[in-house]
Image 1 (cartoon, rainbow, N blue to C red):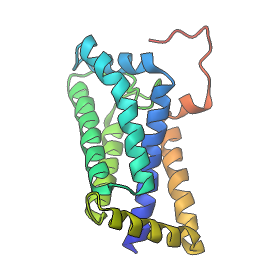
Image 2: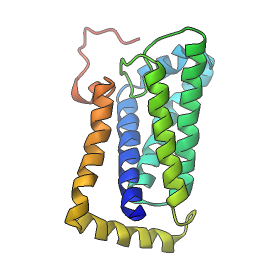
Image 3: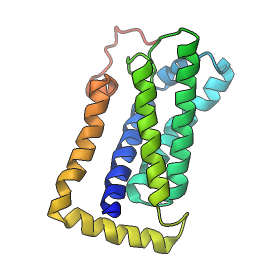
Image 4: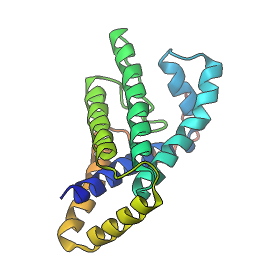
Length: 192
């Protein structure tokens, strides 16, 4: 039971980090500007963080989806999400509202819904960390892959896997954040 839930949680959270990382790679100037919108880092600090952020997100996506180093990957994901959430809360307390740029050049405005969404994602990552078998054990990873293989081929659990991925994408689309993946920026649009 828990192995199936862990598998679906890993795929869902990994998919979200994959989308976030890819969308940030496709619009690097938006990442710097997005970080600057929060008014928590200097421009120089934002320029240092901006190229690292999509790399970290893609690394987390890879580890989560592959099931490697789950405790560490899920813990880092929790810390990253908590940092994003703190930045959103600080700005909401300041009375500021602007595009979060959570997924590159997305236009979703920060607000309580994002805080709740991030809280749910933090809970999901903590569940993954708690259910993971060990820190970096190759044996545990091999065991996870055997379990994953059994789960993937179990037709009773294929539907929840597909549902988890579709739910992840659906949540992002409903929050108007995955639009960068499905549209190309027009040359006449000014990026900020």
